[in-house]
Length: 279
Image (cartoon, rainbow, N blue to C red; front, side):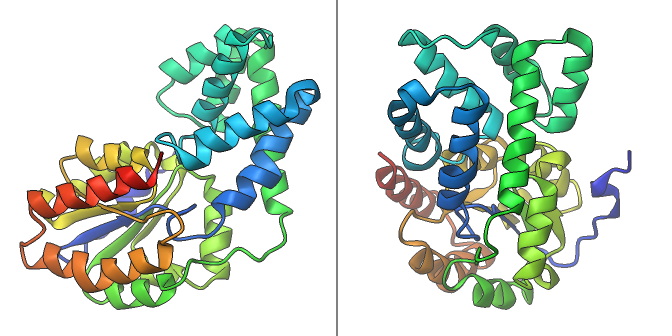
């Protein structure tokens, strides 16, 4: 398989990595409410406890410290919690084991595991994941970037390299960013097939960027963790304050980064504000 990072070329001294769903693209709520959650209820016939499970899914995936969690981790976490409440999920251990041990949380890796184990839970997980992708494809094409995103990317692309680093499905990413004419501002568009966010940042780092010249922009604790694990800076896009966050990214955070003023005090202030925005 061709390594997507082999073709990558560094153009500027600074790199800004940007998450997609819920960060640049206003797609997170609709995907979870219309695709991920309903398909889970359908695949596992969970209609009897539907309201409780849906609210749990939304909390885990949208409104708390696990916001933006990978789809398979979100599923495993939801099932762990409901099974403790006595709602049985057949062969759950196979799913939990795969999520904990795989080095790639993707449909491709899931198919390989099914060939090895023939696990019922994993077959259902793959069916769910494929149905989710289809449901996302069939959403009305109204997905748009948040306010100030397009202008922000255009401005920043003149002074820094920008790469999308997302755990979303690559095809959907390509479709959304192409349709909204955002691809010209990017050096790379990296989805779940390229590896975890942590891995993607690490690979981009190898292209010659100094650690203190890389910024990860995201809306979820997983984005913060990926930045921390690579020792790079983090800038939060705050839930329900996305337009403000993007404006501040362009006018304050990136200039601070480029002037060597994105220090620990500023970083901690941003992280505290971010943590307070998620209950």
